[in-house]
Image (cartoon, rainbow, N blue to C red; front, side, top):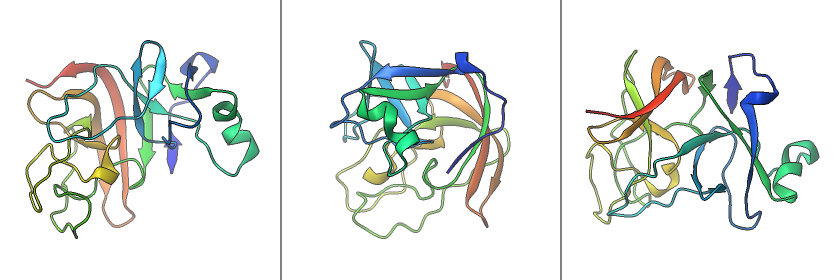
Length: 175
């Protein structure tokens, strides 16, 4: 679920080129822009974070209106600074692991904390290292660590209802 809190105009919604068979991003997740085209983030043990990250607004679904852009080779992203709320489809809930194990170390989101986009997995069977994400969380928001590209800041985190409200910022590297 993605709930954009900032009123948006047409200039905030940008359609990017995309290969409909290759991009599986859903609304509220993040993608990379490479040579003008939208591509999924791919997690790897030694991955580097892509420098141009955008939040997905449209996605492929059973709804004809929502999936029309994808069918014609376009993907809508949100540009500029905005406020939004996402559920666990848009933010990382647990730290570490390979995605095949049960993860029990919950990620804590404190008000004002920097957010980055998950991009790195590990081959270890268990880890709670910051910056490591389960494969299913690649492209979701996570707490930023040193060297990550900061894309947002936590406004509130409701762990009971599993929602994260945040505001995007001008991207910068966390020192």
